[in-house]
Image 1 (spheres, rainbow, N blue to C red):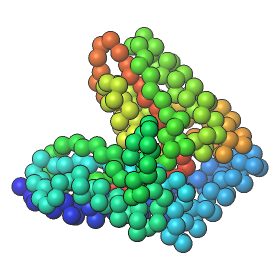
Image 2 (image 1 turned 45 degrees about the horizontal axis):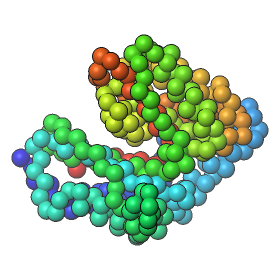
Image 3 (image 1 turned 90 degrees about the horizontal axis):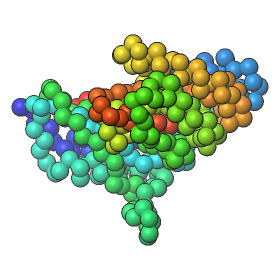
Length: 281
């Protein structure tokens, strides 16, 4: 067994949220640069140029690339040979979020009651945490600061098996078409297929923590990702919704076994401020 103090997890969560809020990464910048070169619409090229400049400024000045620094999403994969010591892991994660948002001057957007009082918690906690138990002697931590302009455009549908591939494609396209400029395109689309009502949504959310353009390992799903990407970009919504070829930068699909009677499908949309980071402890 390997002992891991949860204070280490707290420090890791804090560092990852600060890093991902300020720095979108070289890979994402190169994706945006390539999209700008492919664009034929002058306005679309201008918008992409402004997004790229903004991301460079955020990195250089160590300031958030977007004012909506999101709801804190944390995926934790705990190896079976790990023994956690110290304070409860949930407390450690929330303290890491608390310190990151306070010390890095990230906007605190979480309200304690979703319906009635809606009073700000003033530290962006509690985080939404998903736990998974795996093999090994490590803890893998993935964080995502998920803005709500894109989150609000996400949908889930309990489809019938007879809806098939065309039904799934139609639903994904419908979601993006209805969203229009609201999720701040160019977007990344996470799709979760299978499991149950809640599992499909988690699959879609986790799909948005992949490196952009990292296609499915399953050939038939990989082909579907590419088909959907082409179809979404043919909509012509374009950067900031001002028309163009670059509506979507990537489609990531995760799937899971499901019941014979159903086919849950969730679509989680992410904006171009694709803020996530992963590390192993």
